Length: 132
Image 1 (spheres, rainbow, N blue to C red):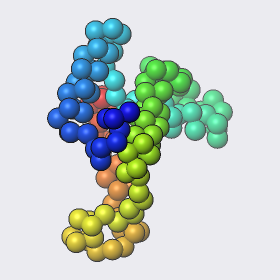
Image 2: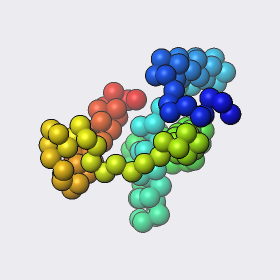
Image 3: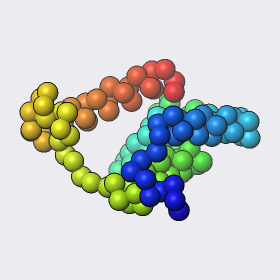
């Protein structure tokens, strides 16, 4: 695998391949791929496990069923695919506080994790508001 021995892929090639994958997905299945619905369904699955029957009664889950389907597997594939790519390129390293963050905000791991968590909440809220 000669491609996987480099330190990383060109962002232009990777972006182009993602674009081709999106077009193929719409052409073959009529569906766009995304992640925000998967996170909501996963939260529904967790809620269903903790309080059986509660999530199914909510208005949103009457429209969107709490199921594992192709999009859920796609999001899992992103995680495991990225992990495999990092392992193959020997580029996997844990950096709790990246150098750029440290130079702007300091070396606090807690501050970094809180900011990342809150940023994820804002991102997911916006994605769900846009019905994406």
